[in-house]
Image: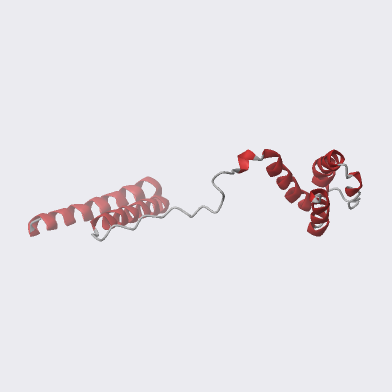
Length: 145
């Protein structure tokens, strides 16, 4: 590009930016001026980024999969649901009493281990549920042969 053409392009850019700033101020006062200035700055940054030549950014590698590709959580929906209920039961005594405890009681009855679910929770239904050690003890008892 010739030197004269660069000068004309630069002058047109400066005049256009000045006209936009004046129009923004005329339309909405100081707020309009700030809005147009922010947009003009954004435009300058975009143009500058496009004008800078450099090497291409490297592509992002896909994460290594740690899971066994033959098994997916969708293959075990009951397990995923129970695991979710155990997490929620730690946060809420109400969730433990109404969601997890009946489910664990049914599971214990189906396994012939009905004495495993005898926890009485706190009196506050909005308080925290059983601690992790208690829930782990119940699950370990149910998983034992």
